[in-house]
Length: 333
Image (cartoon, rainbow, N blue to C red):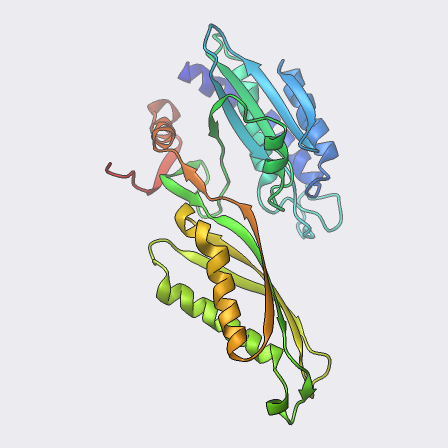
């Protein structure tokens, strides 16, 4: 069967290049992937899969039935939304939409998902169980997975396989990582309320901008000094605004950022820990504050058994043109 899979995949290569270039040239933003979804549904239907559109707004679900009495379901997941970025290339398949580009590889992910469906649907001997293909919208705003899950796409699923392209991994190679793969991604917003005053009389005011700088410094220092370095946290404040004039002490500051963490235990306590730090700093300088912490998506924790299967497949002699990169060894227990 492996040789048959390899031969089918090689025969489909020109078609897959065509599919990827079509998706790349016609990018759509998160939650607006209507044409992309219709195109993907059309390819799946042409392979004989049962297809459901508008799953989780613009998501697509396709199912390939197997043989026998095996009722297990393997899900294969790919995302398909683009980014609000202007493409500046001279490629003949460059984005046709101003200000929108597939800059995160979702055109490739969707093509790989379709390629797997095309290969498996052409096998002379069907697989056991059922393969459920999930094409997820709105990954870039961390919403699409929840949209689809709420509509039941994970019901009765035994396992999920997915991938992400990565520029540091050479072409014709795959990367395999045991355990934590991608971090949980949460949103953080902080409001600081001080008291305005003349720039020459800081003792009569409560300087929200200066206090904001103390909050940022405290958060970064606390992460490096109080948190387990083997369970990393990355906190980035990407937006900060406050003040109305250069000679007037600001009474309000708004900050917003992102918080990333790999380990579920660490992720669980972050909202309360961050709010406590911010509150303590602000109260020290008689300022008021409000902390809004919005959980986004949890970290991806790769199953050890499935990861080993992927690793073994990457080392399979039939696919000897692939190089399998193990970025983290399996646990000993």
